[in-house]
Length: 179
Image (cartoon, rainbow, N blue to C red; front, side, top):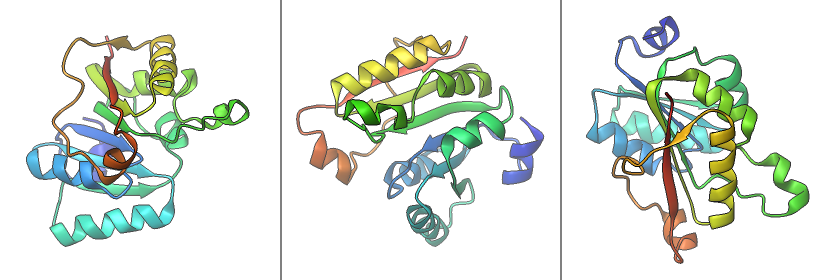
């Protein structure tokens, strides 16, 4: 456990990070089901982060922290090496137009930062409703040094409102592990 996480949470439990928690449905479910794990959420939209933080406070979760920030910057510059047990990236913005693809969250540089910050055997769990986006994420994660896992895609998570609306044709999910 790193000194940063001990300071943030006041304990030495494993840390999992959700990038883009949206309304916080997955985060809250994970926090309730696994109180022995600390959950750190990074949400780019300040209002959404404040909403999730209010839900967390109302529920009384002591194992959750929410930060309004750019996840790429936080993971690359602040998260200590080998300090995260798992990352959760569910339904990131697809930026489907070719000229906008450079705005996608997961690229080789972020993948390398995820790899650097994961503990040995740590995992990155991803899900999207777009097969092409999943293929691009998979390629970036592999290029960044992570390996596809044959283990289940992720811990059981709720189907969010977004997923019900947009993933009617199916969800493409996978897990990737650090060696």
